[in-house]
Length: 196
Image 1 (cartoon, rainbow, N blue to C red):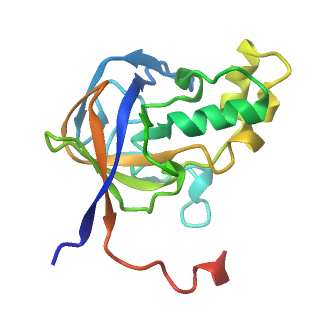
Image 2 (image 1 turned 180 degrees about the horizontal axis):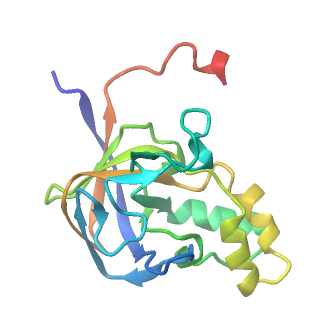
């Protein structure tokens, strides 16, 4: 019995980018990306391992080597537009928020279940780690383009910051292709509301 269920939901790849400059969050737009088991080729956040960060201090001391399940960031074009609207700005360029992939047409992308897969027709498969929490860093970049608006980013992006992911099966992704959503074939944990 298959553990992952293909769905009818898919997203069109409308933007691709790579973070290539050390100490920068911004990404550079590209038309295609090759993915290996280490993540997107040329991406600074790639690699099979990474130092633990503030997101996992309840599990690991900061800076200890852990598996890298944050090789890339996937965002929704619709959620980016909603965030821009909430901030009162015309648009948010995906490069300003360090996006790797922006998809159009996949509903509620930020809340797709952990362990879901996104797969293109040639077999490239990306595994969703979890929701990417909004932080202040993109706001600093946005501030350069929209003075006095950057501080609005974090609250506006809550629940709309996309997901982080890692590569399960290498391949190439090109702007204009689609990624189909596959979800774990299991119910939600019954005690989730209790522990939140």
